[in-house]
Amino acid sequence: MEKRLRIISKKKIRDYSENNTQAELPLTEWYIKMKELNVKNLSELKITFNSVDAVYGYTVFNIGGNNYRLITAIHYNTQHCYIRAIWTHNEYSKPFNQAKLKRGKI
Image (cartoon, rainbow, N blue to C red):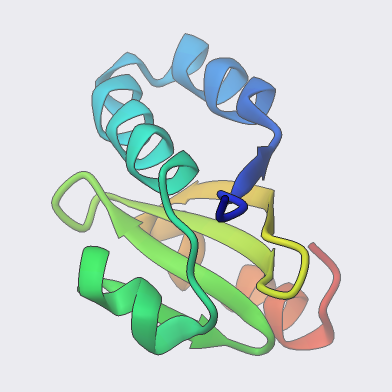
C-alpha cells in the first residue's frame, strides 16, 4: 500500500481561516487533494497543482486564484508536508518576507 502525504498541521489552516474566512474553502480544497497524494518530486506534484513552485527550498502553492501563498516544506522520502506559512499575495511580495524565505527562516 502506498504511503500518502501527511500534512503537518491542519491547525495552521484552521487558525488562518478564522481571521481570513474567504481563504477557508481554497485551503480546505488544497488539504483534501494533498492528503490523497503520493508524489516523489515537484514534477509529480505539478500534475495535480499547476500553480506550485520551488522557492529557496520551500514548495510554494498559489491558492485561491492567486490570492494566497501556502509555503510548505515537503519531504518526499517520508511523505511529510509541513505547512510553514500562509500569506496573502501582498505579504508574500514584501521584501522582508522574501528575505525570510531566502534565509530559510520560516
